[in-house]
Image (tube, rainbow, N blue to C red; front, side):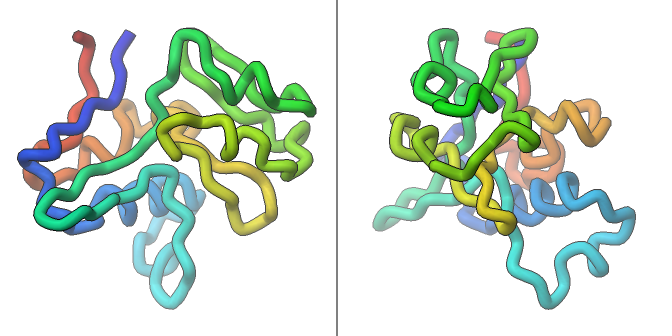
Length: 142
């Protein structure tokens, strides 16, 4: 299965992956209308520590703690991808507490958000990887 991999040696800390992710998941066709003057809620986040920066996104674990601990049954694994059913999510954020990678975050509507590999927005590949100018984020099988 293809997954998102990050090479922190190549990450510039430009945050373009966050903007591309937020735009891809906005439902808008125009990036300016989708993002300008708004708080963005990307499903990938850049962490910066001294002289290193890297993207944090869901690793789609083979035995995900977030899925096991979801009290509402909103998280599930579909073809190797950990997905959230927002109709079931109750916003308890147990998944945020359980994720060892910090890849789940609260969304604007009080529900959990996480990377779902852009499966729902028909990008073909995750927008974070497609928009990374330095190829620090790649979508590949290893």
